[in-house]
Image 1: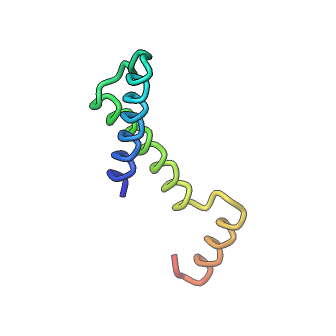
Image 2 (image 1 turned 45 degrees about the vertical axis):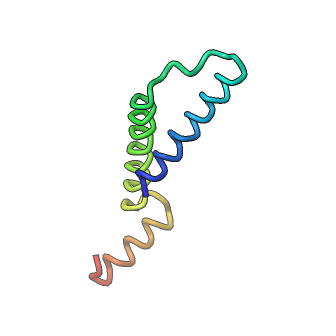
Image 3 (image 1 turned 90 degrees about the vertical axis):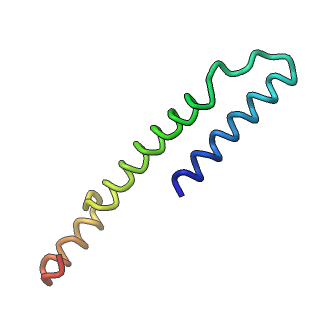
Length: 75
């Protein structure tokens, strides 16, 4: 899933680059590899933060649910 999203983002940037070339503007000064690495890094950081947030009880509801599970020996 992550690889598909990264490929889609890279494709969108490359299409933007091609449109700029067609209209005579300077193309984006990035290689396809640099774009892939940048998008991959952003996706990895975003998914890391999301996973941390979902796995830890940081909201009031999450803390309540965590206490509920611990009280019943489920966690």
